[in-house]
Image (tube, rainbow, N blue to C red; front, side, top):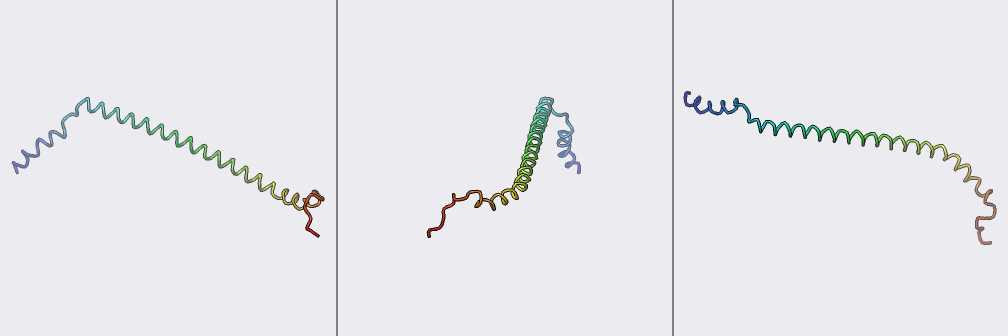
Amino acid sequence: MLAACLVLSPLAAAQTAAPDPQQLETVEQQLEGSKAEQDRIAAEVAAAMREQDEIASRLIEILRDLMHSRPKFRRASRRWPTISGGLRPRAAR
């Protein structure tokens, strides 16, 4: 058991030793850089979602316009033979 303690004690001491200040600063800078990158990506995603919502709203407007104009088009197309008069080619006699 004493041998195990002697073997494990340097490992335990290494784990509890204070980290190198330079390494700690490097890790903190990496964390800050990662956070900034995460914030930038989140802003881009939010902007893309807003743009997607705007496009969806515009498509809904277009579809509503088409639905409202469709009956008008049908009425006009039924009147086409009377409006165009003799413009349509006649079948050979």
